[in-house]
Length: 278
Image 1 (cartoon, helix red, strand yellow):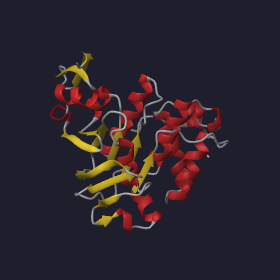
Image 2 (image 1 turned 45 degrees about the vertical axis):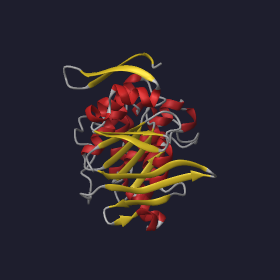
Image 3 (image 1 turned 135 degrees about the horizontal axis):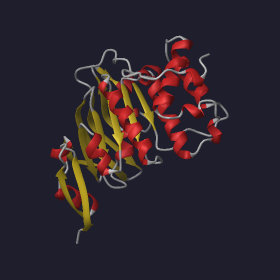
Image 4 (image 1 turned 60 degrees about the horizontal axis):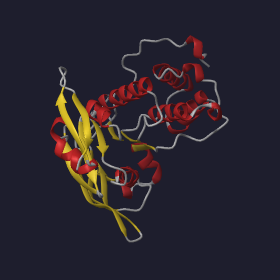
């Protein structure tokens, strides 16, 4: 086994190119979810979450963002369909579906006695076809990129919530799924860790995979999204590139705030909240 201290740096192309990426991407058609008599998602249709793009879902608490991710992942009952290329995901066996799509929830992975490195290696060996040596090297490089290499031999039970969140993201990334769904992957992280994770999410998408992320931080969303989808009351109220989807009117209607939105010198949208809307 490669020892953590011997890992080499400089892996510019860490994520290998996606295999068999469908030009049509992931499509959501007429998706509805109800809990008892409450409609949480109402007839949601989203054309082509495209490979190569980071799509970020925004909206106030209770808008339906997490429910949408969980419905796409097949974790909750839903009406409508989710299609990947020519495949209706609901019709696939669980194993075939999990080969296409991986979901990371908000809650960090549990307090296991396995080390961080063992978790990454064992999971990848079970689900993949790479040799143990290749999996070990990939796990160590990923931990280095996340500045988690010093925790490689630490049991998960001894990590902080933010560190477990990072380890959970690493475990999902090791699977190299065609579709990655992430629910608030940076909510427990400091600013540096947020940059690291969002950068790797972008790299993962650029390798030819489809990435859908729920974020509450609008500044992060505006900076990292190729496509923004805003939800309110279980319905889509905006969909497009950040400079198209984001507006002062949208933020007023979604969050009840007044905000000034304008691009900086690099073209990145900056959001300055000026107060509560009356």
